[in-house]
Structures are given as structure tokens and as C-alpha cells.
Amino acid sequence: MDYRATLDIIFETFIIPLYQLLFREDPPCMSKRAMRTMVKVAHWFSIDEGRVVGVFGTHKALHALPKFVTDTTLLREVCYQMTHGFLKVLNKGKKKP
Figure 1 (cartoon, one colour):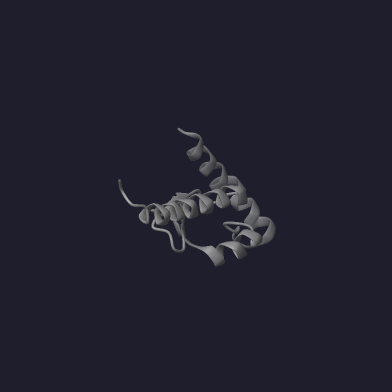
Figure 2 (figure 1 turned 120 degrees about the vertical axis):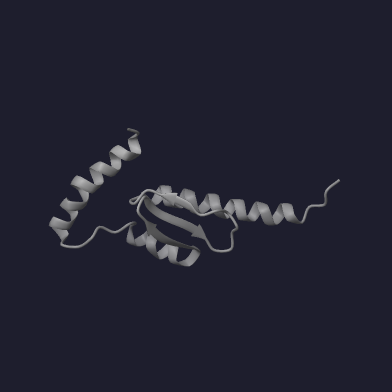
């Protein structure tokens, strides 16, 4: 069993029920600050394995992330997709020798 499966088991059997017991609501998939930023630059949706993130205006394939990610991980994914999109646009304009 890899570490991702172990983390999923820990979250599903301990962390999520504990959060629901304490706060009487489902846990958020990301922080409120990250949510405000994501609304402006990307779209996301949930799947059984986690969250799928795609940045507006890029042609990079959507990436699946774990159900609960830190803001740093989310920011890295958005930056990666944006950088790939910009490089694709810049390389498109280059003339081939």
C-alpha cells in the first residue's frame, strides 16, 4: 500500500468524521483564501479519487489532486498549468529553422 492510500484511509476514517463531529459540517476541500483565488483563475470539480483542477486559458490536461490539499500544493499545480500554457503560446509563434 502506498502512502497516498494510507493517507486516504486516515482522512476517511478519522479526520473527516472528527471534523464533522466538531463543526457539524463537511470539511472544505481548500481554505477560504485559496477558494477566492481559484474562482478567478481556475475551475475544479470532485471525483471519487480527489479533485480535478484546470486553469482557464490553458490547454494542459486536467490534473487529479488528492481530496484535501494544502494551499501550497494547489498553488504549485496552478502555476505549473499556467506556465505550460504560456510556454505553448510562446513556442507557437517561433519559426522553425
